[in-house]
Length: 462
Image 1 (cartoon, rainbow, N blue to C red):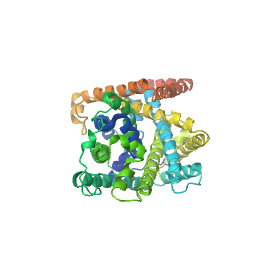
Image 2: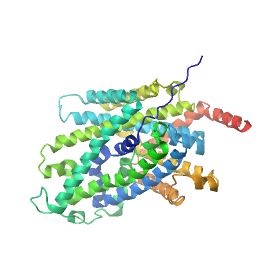
Image 3: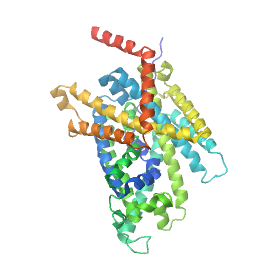
Image 4: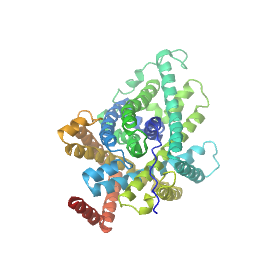
């Protein structure tokens, strides 16, 4: 007698997925990347984060509209398959898998760098390997245990940022840590104006800003393992926008009010500077610990989402069937191991040459833009297939539809065009499409298009 196949467990609580998406988005992009974004745009970077945050809210609401109606593992890959066709689903799934593999390689390598702060004589690769093994082990535990780890990882980052905002506001308003002299906010316009590099500076920074938001869409990937999808996804998506604005815009507002924006990059991490200003001399060690947990948290989320995406691709017969098998605890074990092994190759490549590593990570932003555009296109098609009555019955609608969908798509196309325009980011527009072309070639070479066509005909006959 055939045994019943184990299924993905709905073990994630509302608090887990809410902090998971926030944890994935608040990573080294904020703690370390913010300095280079400030350098490009000056105080006007606040506008970049605010406008991009609004666009991300629309993208998340578009995803939420579909996820609440059809909560499945793999989420936007499955929606792309369903509404845009098999090839779009295949490309989106594999692209997202690769995007997070690349991002995780970045994070575990960062772990090696951060650990050298305390253990300068140890090799970087040893810490990177230890981080990979630890995160893979955590992902092999029950999904609820994974959610707990991620909850606490994310909480450490959030508490640090909130503490910095509160301390900073105390300095701005009451002069706490500054001899009782309130700093005020004149630094926002006192060094070359609010737009020291003009609008072009803000445009140049948008690629960095959008990269920082990578990971918010992970709420959709968790949809297949959430206990109460309608309640949990609705609340998590609605709250993420405001939290991101507080943590990104709020934190950077405080930092640039206290310090002249043109000094931030030269004197180290803006977070370390703020804590040192009020007399916390262990600030460098504290922030190093927080950034370490930020890297582990992002890697933890990345391994989770990539294994689920690989599982989903196997279910759709677009990846080896072994990746579709689950452990007794409902974990896609083979998909997890395969992902970890690929990351191991990445760590080795980074060990051999840091240039290889830097080139590969440039794909991440392009991959994110592709994913977000596919979410919007899938939602537009999803809506067009509904009758007026069905659309009326939707419980979680995208605000300002369809205008919000089209404006968001135009914004993403604009960011991609800017990446092509500026030499520093142009490489992403070469490597990204080349990866998609390679995937397309494999799709047709393996005859997947014929199989999908046959399945569609069978459905019609049925």
